[in-house]
Amino acid sequence: MPRPEDAPLSVSELNRRARQALEQDVGEVWVEGELSGVSRPGSGHVYFTLKDERAQLRCALFRTRARFVAAPMRDGDRVKVRGQVSLFEPRGDYQLIVEAVQAAGVGELLAAFERLKTRLAAEGVFANARALPFPPRHLLVLTSPTGAAIRDVLAVLAARWPLTQVTLIPVPVQGREAAPAMISALGLLNRQQALDPTRDAILITRGGGSLEDLWAFNDEHLARAIFHSRLPVMSAVGHEVDTTLSDLAADVRAPTPSAAAEQLVPDRRDLGHRLERLAERLARAQRARLDTEAQRLDHLRARLRHPGEVLAARRRQLDQMAGRLRRAVQARLVLERRREQHLRQRLALRSPDRLLDQAGQRLERATLRLHQAMPRALARHRERLGGLARELQAVSPLAVLGRGYAILEDERGRVVRRAADTTPGQSLEARLGEGRLALRVTGVEADVDADNPGAHGGKPSKR
Image (cartoon, rainbow, N blue to C red; front, side, top):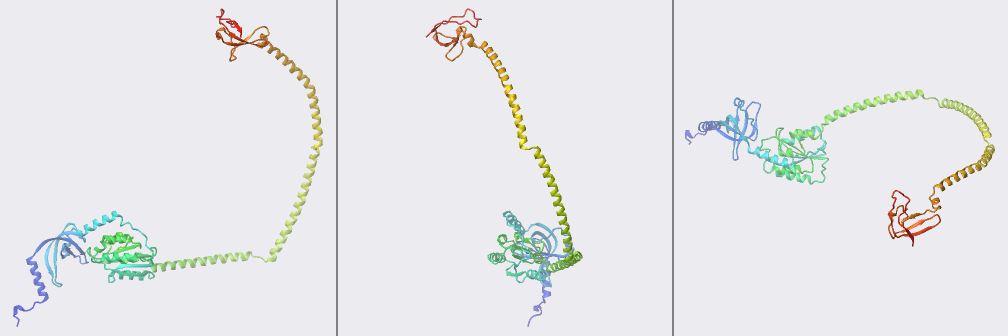
């Protein structure tokens, strides 16, 4: 039979005693760690997890204290918190009731994320910006088959554009096996020859979570696999404030899974409204065109006359034109006859026989004048020629030679004017009034009268 002190405790009693023991034994402490899973419900309280490499600690920062905290409190931030160790009795959760929060530096995960992001950006892994087909013929969704993301995507696609074929590629989206599974699925899809990059697209998505929950999408190899994908890739991971390396490496990023589905396909309701507006515009244009053509038909019908009436009018017009043509021909004949008569008169006045007679008469008169003028002109020219010959004879050097003078020339034909221009033994030639003499200089004497240009030094002799 159990003793009274061994009577079992209720769960609430045990949790109450544990809470009292924790609060009395540990009390208020400072704890440093990395923030994760920060949540701010509408009550104004802040709930988060403080962790290090080996353990995690649930924390609660109530509204009365949260308004005095200046630190931004984002996932990945490293902080120091002061609080009371306690236990939440209804669930038996061990927790820290936080009183104050101080920033302690960037968390290790966030620092690793920034380093990897900088390196991949420098390598150009985030340079993809291909346009996705709109809408895609075949959409391949890489996500968890049981998550809320696939339900949101399918719901939006069904409401907006149910014509797109959707294929779910089930992969884990959290944990160590998530990144290798997604890399393997991407490789398999890119090897499918039936998929066309201009008509098909890949969507990688999952719902929100802490930095640790989304860490698989910060895998370096997954980012490179997305960058090298033959098919265009859209990434929609977490909430709008979450940014992963997969988002940066993809061609297009969407803030949420639902937003991704909205970006991928048009809204059939908007298209329906647009078609209705276009149909109304087409109907109005048709009515306006029919009215215009009806008015044109009425106008043409009013202008249309009986064929017999038209033929009669054309016959009258033809008769008028025939009369005008006859009158024009007769007038032209009269004009041409007058012109022919005028040309005949001009031709008679300028008959070739008459012109030949006149030219023959002028030629006879000119010949007579020429015969009369030629003897007189010849006599004048002979008289003038005789005078010029006499004048030339008077000044000719040959006339001087005829009076007994001679002209001496050296071997080069130059005239010798001074005895000093010759040397003994030099050959000279003497030009007389009649004939020439070959001479040789035997001696040279100086000229007594140097001013007399006619004196010759030396005694020439025959060879």
